[in-house]
Length: 172
Image (tube, rainbow, N blue to C red):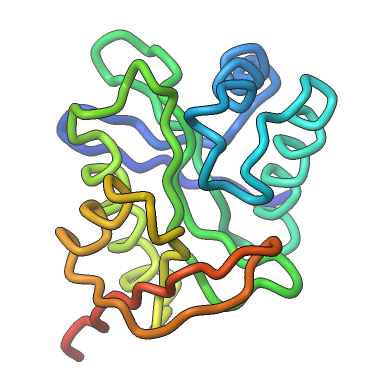
C-alpha cells in the first residue's frame, strides 16, 4: 500500500480519498454543471461515481501519485478533488481540479492546484506538467493561467477537442 501524503494550505487539507467521501463525491459528480467539461461531459450515476472514486484511490497504488480529497480545514467539509493524474493512455502528467459547485468562486481550486503543482515539481520531480481544459471552461483556464500555465496545444480527449495548458518547469 502507498502512504498518501497529506498537504495543507492556508484553508485546505488535501488527503487521500476514502469511503467516507463517497456520498459527497457522488453528489458532486451527479451535478451536470460540475461534469459538463469533464470526461464525456455527462453527470455520473452513483455506480459510476463509485467506480471512478475506486479508480482514483487505486491510481495512488499503481502510480505513486493521484488525486486528493479536498477538505475545508476549518470545517472538515468535503469540497472536491485536486491532484496529479496520469492513467494509461492519458496525454501527459496532469494537475486536475474539480470542486462541488457550492465551493466555486472562493479561490479553493487555485489554492489546491498550487499545492498539487508544487508537489509534482518538488516531490515527484515532474517536468512538462499539464492541465487538460475544454475551451469553454473559462474558470479552469483562469486557474491554470494564474498558476503560470500557457496554452501549448490541443488533443482529442473523450471525443472532444481539448486544450493543453503547460505549466512552467521550476528553475533548477
